[in-house]
Image 1 (spheres, rainbow, N blue to C red):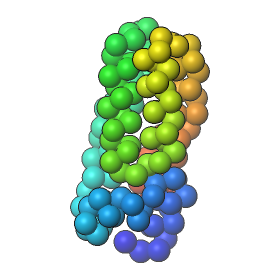
Image 2: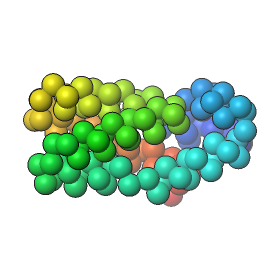
Image 3: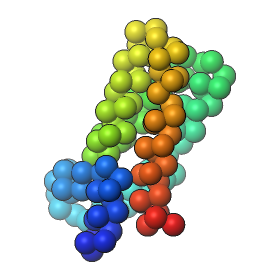
Image 4: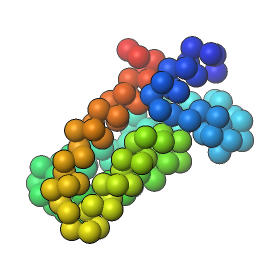
Length: 118
């Protein structure tokens, strides 16, 4: 991974060093999993569940996306989703929904960085 690529990921709040530790230093494997993140449907499931007022599906999608983002060391997104999952679990639907703007901004920043800021 060249320095520019690493900087793009770090600027998107991905802790590259932590992720590489998890992937035993294998940069190609990390890149493969970052590419898989692009195909992950949980963000879309989360937004659809919120639009449909489906609390159970929203909790499931948010919790799953939290796990994926945590495994890839997407620290800011992980922390936001941790808060959202907590809100869903404490029946604070509106509080969880209100977090979506920030979650969406962070998610889009990560997607852009994975795509090489295209």
